[in-house]
Image (cartoon, rainbow over all chains, first blue to last red):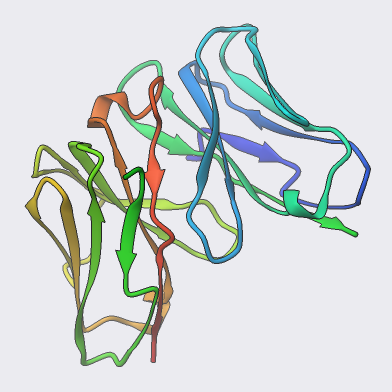
Length: 111
Length: 117
């Protein structure tokens, strides 16, 4: 059973376009993280959100944690080729200390 | 030093070989992890070490054998692997097992790209 479902699974867009990646679950999470993984590298932590309704900005990236702490979104404004990579949400369920990765979103930004 | 260092970066081995993957961190983290990742898929947890003791083994076949010689080092010994074991093997660390989230998160190494022939 996959607790964290991401959509879309694959995304290919032109440079300058905006996009949103979703991370959804039927379970409540005490906190969620977003990672970006470039080809040939390990995942790199982008942000941690811990409070329902929280919004965090990191330059052109905006992260939101759902009010009920069951979902999260990542919005990228004016995408650049350097944003290309695998985006992973990850979280620890509220019912225990098990850590889960989402199903992943592979983003390609075409120059 | 805020890195997790993995060696080797690439490894090709035959099904009868014995090899080891190595992971090192000097951040004082007390939890270390091995993950297996196939292309464009999320990492799958294999093992968790907490304070140098194995705390989680996610039903991994015995041909994978982890070892934690001290708080900074984590090894993964490989023996009699199958071609389907070819993948990117990632090591990660966190402050401790229950505080990977909410704090500095998990720090991942760049991985070892393993090919079994």
